Image 1 (tube, rainbow, N blue to C red):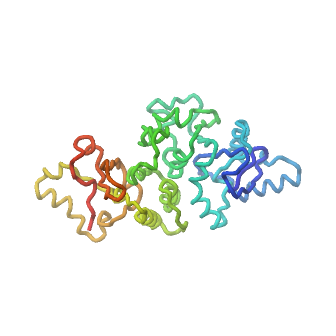
Image 2: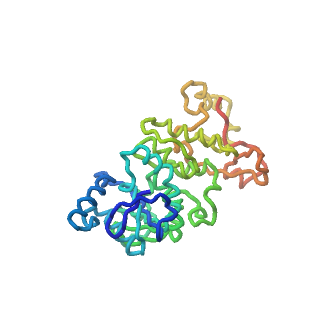
Image 3: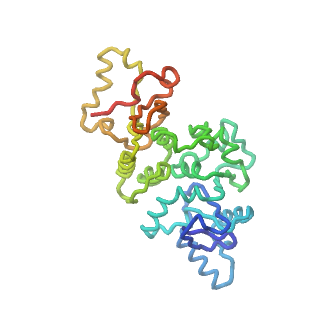
Length: 336
């Protein structure tokens, strides 16, 4: 794991992230469309400044410099940022970083979530606040950066504190559809079903299609090879890994169109129209796995209580749970 010294933006490698002296801060942000300074560029600045006796921190870009200054102000000697602390020219290092990133956020002392489109004085509790409209909430990678760290501090474009994840759990829950209990850690988010965790990623965007899957690895405790260029096959591989887990969570298959009791009241001809598409060979819902996290949009599922660890879990819709737990309606139909 490469870390930046907050004193001089010098890159240093640590083999054990859990043994960094004094711990480390970690940055969550959205990449600028204009680009960000890379590992190689920051390293080159450091080498040149050592020759002249200057402080590299004064020559890196503003976001890196301000990250170092904020972390140093709070007493941290080391900080991590994905733009410049991963050597992306090494496929081995890149793969290790993507598979380890979730744990790096977990092990951090603090995560600074920098929202460059939110300005000082904005009130996150207002429905039309800049905070709620921030691009940060729409990106795939920021989901794990919200959930993994124990302590998250949101910073404005001026690098001023907006509030913590705990303090802003209400607005965050409304914006992300993630239960407040998971945000405040009153509940373990690993206890949420696969379908529910997938639904948190629905609608989020990634620059690379493969990152739709790679950004979720830590959220499901999955490690798998990173192969950019495979396209949506990456998300298929993720689901295959989830299906191999010792205790299969059947909500993995709870995606796509949902039909409740109203379907039973429709005339036969309407039902025929609803299901006619499944006879098409290329109809997406004929397949066992979803094509993207967006297929899980709106999935909020609960398990039948009191089952043994070896019992088959039957998922229920939220309304089925609240109205009649004993009903045996399945949340999904296996397409075959």
